[in-house]
Image (cartoon, rainbow, N blue to C red):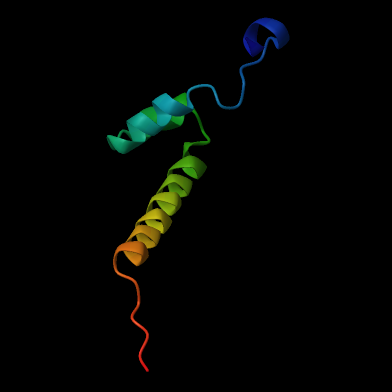
Length: 66
């Protein structure tokens, strides 16, 4: 849509394909689809790790000693 209206691609175009290629360790292809993949992948990893820590703390709460 932005290509038609403004004759420019949106900054997020190709992000899904870039992430998919990065997950498959095809970094050159990922970079060609969207340069923002260098920010998106670390952000996704950060979200994944923090969610795993949160879930671990829910399943195994810290016991309080008297």
